[in-house]
Structure formats: C-alpha cells, structure tokens
Image (cartoon, rainbow, N blue to C red):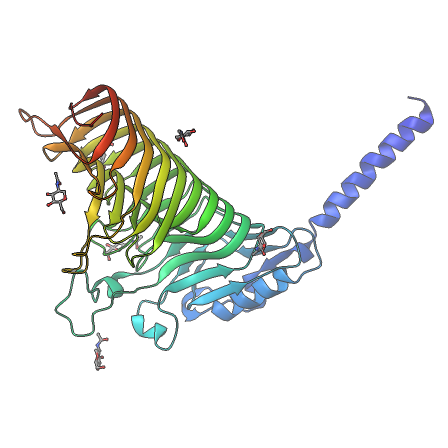
Length: 406
Ligand SMILES: *[C@@H]1O[C@H](CO)[C@@H](O)[C@H](O)[C@H]1NC(C)=O
Ligand SMILES: *[C@@H]1O[C@H](CO)[C@@H](O)[C@H](O)[C@H]1NC(C)=O
Ligand SMILES: *[C@@H]1O[C@H](CO)[C@@H](O)[C@H](O)[C@H]1NC(C)=O
Ligand SMILES: *[C@@H]1O[C@H](CO)[C@@H](O)[C@H](O)[C@H]1NC(C)=O
Ligand SMILES: *[C@@H]1O[C@H](CO)[C@@H](O)[C@H](O)[C@H]1NC(C)=O
Ligand SMILES: *[C@@H]1O[C@H](CO)[C@@H](O)[C@H](O)[C@H]1NC(C)=O
C-alpha cells in the first residue's frame, strides 16, 4: 500500500467508526424512564412503556431499542405493543423487574387472556436479564381447575407474554415467574427463537404452561429451565418445524404435543424434534395427546436423548383424551399419528407403565420407531411394563419390552 492507500485505508476506518458511533447515539435508545415511568413498583407505568414503544417503533433509526433499566421495579397494567414498526429490527431490553397487577379486577372490561403482548411486530428481540412477574396468586385462588366450587371461578387467566403474528423474532435471557396462566405464548409466528429463559412458578399453580406454541413454524427453544404447574412446553394444533434442545423441565407436566383437536377441528403438526431434555419429577415426559373427536395428523416427530428422573408417564401417547364427560362418545375420524421416533431414552418411572402408547382405534399409530430405551422403576423392587394399543412400528434395544405391533 502506498501513502495514499494507507491514508484512504485510515480514512475508511475512521468513517466506519463514525458511522458506528452514530448508530449508537442516544436517539436509538428509548428508555421508559424518559417517558415518565415512576419505577416505584405500585404506580401503573404502562403508559410510559407504550410511549417508549411507540417512539421506538416509529423511529427513523436502524436499530431502535426500548430500555427497561436494571434494579428497578415497574408495575405494568395489561398492554399490547403494536407493530409493524419502521425498522426491520427492534430490540426490547428488559433489565429491571416487570410486575403484573395483583388483582384480577384490573382486567375488568379488558381481555383477560393476556398481560403483555406484541402484535404484528417482526424482527423483534426481547432480551435482558430482567424478570417478568405475573403475580398470579389471586388468579390461581379463583381458578376453576382448583376451585370449581367458587361461583365465579375463572377458566381463563392472563398469559404473561404473548407474541401474536410475527416473523424473525426472539426472546432470550429473561426470567419469568408466577404467571397467572401460560408464561410465554407464540402464535402465528414464523421463525422464532427462545433461548436461555428461566420459568418458575409453583407446582400447584393451575394451567401455568411454560411455553405454548400455536400456528407457528420454524421455532427453536434452547437452553432453558422450566418449573411450573402445567406443561413445560406445549405444542398446539397447527405447527411445523419446532426444535427443542437442552431444556430442563420439572416440576410440571412435561413436553406435550397437544392436547389437539379439542373442538373437533383439523390439526396439522409435523417436524417436531426434541433432544437433550431432562425431566425432574414431572407427571409426563414425552407426550402426544389428542381428543378422539379431532381430525388431521401429527407426523415426523423425534424425541431423543431424554433423561427422566421419577416421572409418572415417561413416554405416553394418549389418543383417548377427553376431560369433558360425554363430549367424546361419538367416534369420529381421529388424529393420525405417524413416523414418531423415540431414541436414547433413560431413567425412572413412578408408575408401572413406563411406556404407554394408547392410540386411536379408528386411526392407529403407524411408523413408531423405538431404539435404545432403558426405563426402570423409581420404586425399588418394582418392575415397569410397556402397554400399546393400536400402535404399529419397530423397536430395538428397548426395556420394557415388547409392545409395538408389526
Ligand atoms: C410475516 O411474513 C409474511 C410473509 O412474508 C407476511 O405476509 C406477514 O405480513 C409478515 N408478518 C409480519 C407481522 O411482519
Ligand atoms: C363474584 O360475582 C359476584 C356477583 O357478580 C361479585 O359480587 C363478586 O365480587 C365476585 N367475586 C369474585 C371473587 O370475583
Ligand atoms: C411465586 O408465588 C409463590 C406463591 O404465591 C410465592 O411463594 C413465591 O415467592 C413467588 N415467587 C416470586 C419470585 O415472587
Ligand atoms: C430435581 O429437582 C429438585 C428440586 O425440585 C432438586 O433438588 C433435585 O436436585 C433435582 N434432581 C436432579 C436429579 O437434578
Ligand atoms: C420421518 O421423520 C423424520 C424426522 O422428521 C424425517 O427425517 C423422515 O424423512 C420421515 N420419514 C418419512 C418416511 O416420512
Ligand atoms: C387407554 O385409554 C382408554 C380410554 O380412555 C382407557 O380406558 C385405558 O385405561 C387406557 N389404557 C392405558 C394403558 O392407559
């Protein structure tokens, strides 16, 4: 390089640096404190959050970022952050603590299905080491599941954080505690990552799924620990290409595909891959659950590298699921389950049936593949068994054995 070249090179570096620092100027940051948040933990700060969001969402910058600063607590009433936004990427960094209102009456006249939501936002990254506390106790105390005797018990309670209709988005590094119902719900999203989240609510809290996925594609859940009163992760009626890896579940109800087809509807669930999951004292491990009245299919599913510690139903398919009396008498087509593999699975079962494939009589399970499975009883001196009904496939090196029909 001659002198001129060197100068050009240095100039290039300098301008690069300038551009970079321009991008990081304060106009990119929308701190809720600058929009009037009190952060006293009992005044409603939702307006400041919405204003910071609206400013970021319509900002003419490339990388707008909403900031919820650390070491502060914000009471936030139910709110939806709407898109689409101007920038193709928008960040929402939560370092402080967000708290939901304690009293269900705060939802009077509002949509009781949600607390915080993002709707029609793409390129959204919700990140930070803060926490999202649903303060769900008052909702749990009036839930129909555990208090059916209450005249106005509630079936529906707010999901802590909903992503409704999105592309290319993520949530990472956050702590979720005590949601009044589901902690994270992803619906109508294409390409979504959930990484390194911690979810924690009591074992006896009703319907507190960790993560629920509905009508979505290309979803990845990794490196997360979920303790709750219901499903660790549940996969609903219309989903494809879901990968789950390195998760720890328990207490709770395990990882569940379903329940599917509740309203006699058509379901399509395919390409689900669960690997490296540890289940600690959950009621189920790898579960597929469909209502007899449903239609459609579940196919191309892999459960592998699973470890169970004192799990009630480690491997279970229940196609005879119906928790409403008389609603399912009529035998309709049923959901077709096919091409499901279970590989490299070890651990202990607290019930005697460690493998329970209870498939539909009208549409049997086809192409079940079981390989390298060792399940024993959690209770010293007891033996476990496998039970299969209408389940066809092959097995190699599986204990307990035998089960599948050829
Ligand atoms: C997501 O992408 C699809 C297909 O490109 C598009 O139709 C839809 O509007 C996008 N949704 C959002 C919220 O950006
Ligand atoms: C139940 O409903 C009654 C009548 O609508 C109302 O007075 C009461 O406050 C409600 N209780 C709860 C716990 O919501
Ligand atoms: C979650 O709720 C339970 C039951 O109300 C409570 O004991 C626990 O302290 C709560 N956790 C947090 C982090 O507030
Ligand atoms: C299971 O979870 C309990 C806490 O609920 C913990 O004390 C125990 O160490 C865990 N077991 C294993 C094998 O990790
Ligand atoms: C079964 O599912 C696996 C995993 O999704 C897939 O790779 C394979 O092609 C499927 N096999 C058939 C016969 O569809
Ligand atoms: C299979 O489902 C039927 C119908 O619900 C039930 O009666 C039976 O006990 C189940 N079998 C096993 C082994 O769980």
